[in-house]
Image (tube, rainbow over all chains, first blue to last red; front, top):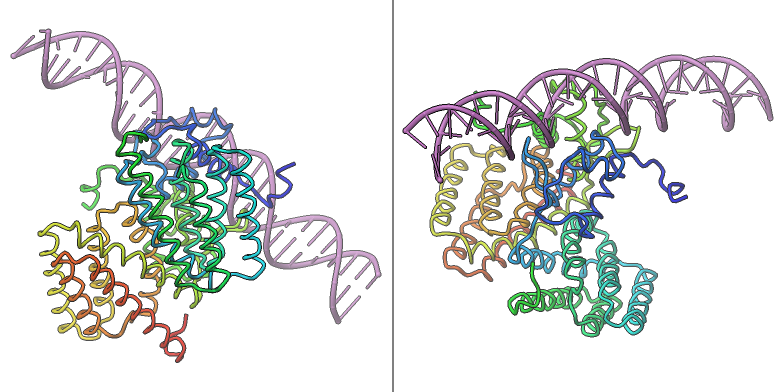
Amino acid sequence: MPEAIAQTYTRADEAFDCLQTAIVKGDLSPGEKIGEVELCSRFNLTRGPLREALGRLESRGLLVRRPHAGVKVVSVSAEELMELYRIRETMEGLAARQAAERMTDQEIADLHATLDAHEQMIEQAQGQAYYQAEGDYDFHHRIATGSRNAKLAQMLLGDLYYMVRMYRYRLSTSSGRPHMALEEHRRIVEAIAQRDGELAEFLMKRHINAARKNIETKIQNGALTI
Amino acid sequence: MPEAIAQTYTRADEAFDCLQTAIVKGDLSPGEKIGEVELCSRFNLTRGPLREALGRLESRGLLVRRPHAGVKVVSVSAEELMELYRIRETMEGLAARQAAERMTDQEIADLHATLDAHEQMIEQAQGQAYYQAEGDYDFHHRIATGSRNAKLAQMLLGDLYYMVRMYRYRLSTSSGRPHMALEEHRRIVEAIAQRDGELAEFLMKRHINAARKNIETKIQNGALTI
DNA sequence: GATTTATGGATTGTTGACAATAATGTTATG
DNA sequence: CATAACATTATTGTCAACAATCCATAAATC
């Protein structure tokens, strides 16, 4: 049934999706060396499409590949994770500004609704970090696409988020400050609704900077290990 | 002879490089539909490695690919080109700031030397837009790597620059304001040398913004066609 | 005459076999 | 006993044939 939607979904696409989610969800651990044949049997693929998918994943930075030596999942150090957040800070700041200028009223309404749903989730599934992380992802996803900047959205959604999510799933407690984050989200949406791009950019940058600092202190305290 | 340097350089890497330069240099025009077999005969490849390279290029946004329908070079509209410059503005601003904080003294000296070389080139080959563009690329390349932010450098050098360069070659006159640009470059390097990250970021953003406006007005005047 | 449908051709997607290379374990020597 | 050279083995890189899909041309019907 689910294949009814997809127009034409090649084996390589299938391989790409499988591997990407496997990496993000942690089924394939960072640093783990994986053989092509093993991957084939694991995901019911042949090596042709698999290799095409490996190429894509390598160029996206989720895999590292040494000729004749095999492929392994990229392992990101704590410093590199912080660098990722610094990139996010500037890029999502831009996304928020452009979203404020370009989102339709309908999209803004949807964004409000999304936040309401997140609030429900936080209250109901208190401490369930998984839903929290997914809600966070949903919020940032909407703003990235709302920027109407195709390349920006592609870079955020296609490159950065997967790397960050990879560690979200693993750490399983991205921010640990759900109410605070939700409040910050609300303010950002307010700024967008008022079409105040400058403010939206400022608030988004501060929001991501706070998340980065939060993780940084946790790592320094030894509460999180990467 | 040239293969003596490369440790292990697979056919897919070869295909990737060939296609990328062909796209950037304009041997393959935007929107042009290209068949796999034609590409194979043109670059002396077989379809296996070629397809792997096509996958990589697609995921980098230089190619668009519809299943069973073939592959064509991406065509960027004027608006999309402007969006690319907006992304560059924020990301290279970050790169300049981090470069000011992290570049070694040796790297900064090299940067000075690079600018001197560019000045020579501008005087000698007056109006030769090609060298000018290459010099510009060299400058931005050094700052991206000098940021010591691996992912940032990867995104700038691996994604954005190739798209921008694609149109540099085609338009063959990126800025048309060589002395002005050189002067801006000098100021940025000065700020980096003084380890003033904040200033370096500000100047870099202004520099790229000026370049963007320059192209924008040229397009509006009909002096440039994309 | 225009639109729709079928058929043929060309092109892409996939597969499995073959060749080249690097990692590993073994043996011989200092 | 440690080290280095060698051979083996397993894995990756490459290739060419096969199958599936789409596009264009042409015929037929409204």
